[in-house]
Image 1: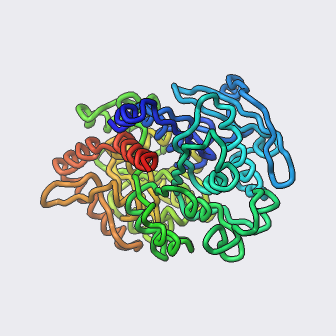
Image 2: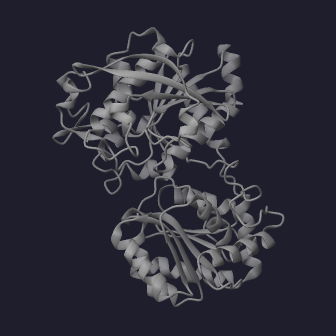
Image 3: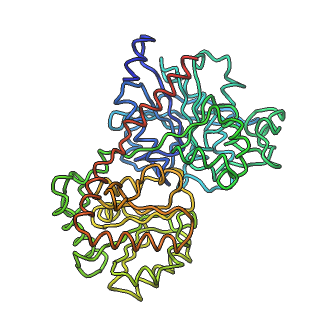
Length: 492
């Protein structure tokens, strides 16, 4: 609807350049990659001319790189140097992807974590701006930037490219996916790499302590700032979640909003998922869930016990994900009539902890260290309770995927978990999962006990499963909200 209004009012389709450091299926370290594919896909379905641009990493699979075509090559200023940039192009599932090619910066394993990340993404931001000159008649109405790696683009638009004809009508939305990662570097980066003057080293602009912050720059200079859930937008304006930027975010609250992420219903679909033992829908979920539960128990080396609830976790094993709450009460959890399944990797202490319990409780605990899309799908389809006790969670997608597969999430009420999971009310039957409020191991344990007791009530549990599977966590409504935001900026 919004896209149709845009066409009627302007006579042309709105053009959006979506800028991200990673995107499915080319490169992924976390939820940003899911968003950078699924949100543009939803926008395109609503009539927006959206194009994605990202680095061409050395880890991108050859079956993609061999199909890319080079559109242009040109020089990009990185301080006093002029670095090579190639602009390559590929259409994937109807979506236009552009890739910034520079082997010195990007032909490395993985995406981040290098000593020169500040220089690499300084180059990327400038290269994105230069690339628009080589995209034909594509002059973006909106540049949608994501996380600190793209944080200098709003500054460049106002400083270096303010008079460039290809950006004459451009506005910038900046989305914070996780405020914890800010892109903090020495102030020397301003002149040496970014080509900006030292006037930007001020509290009103980019100064953050004794450094400069890419994400602060974006918050200051973007036209609109969004986060990936309404609750997270509120939380980051407080000192506990604000990561030192809460004062600035309160000051800029007039342009800050939260739009919850969705999930790609084409990808996460129990009726078509090839990675699960038996496909099912909300019409035949009882048989389908049972078949997948048995398959999951076999895969994880657990007894096939259809009446024993399976509690599952698919996560990075880091403190943010609330793993310390689980380790605190693991014995009490296993004293319940449950089986426990985990897929993930991260801190070695946590890995060792869960591997010990898998060996000590071979009939109750199944653990796979690492990650597998195939096993993750089987866990979503075959488990009963999906545990996410996060310390903070800007949005999270696992709770939405689990609901799609009829597995009930059990979450802490923070960020997107609070916005997407409705706790079960045993008096009214309402809800699509379970939740607890405080970051407290024993409060979590009580809700786990409540969920396990509810599981024994077959009628109540089946109603909860139906509620969960009926919850609309698709990208459609979120895409409409982004279009409204784009439209508001363009009207101004």
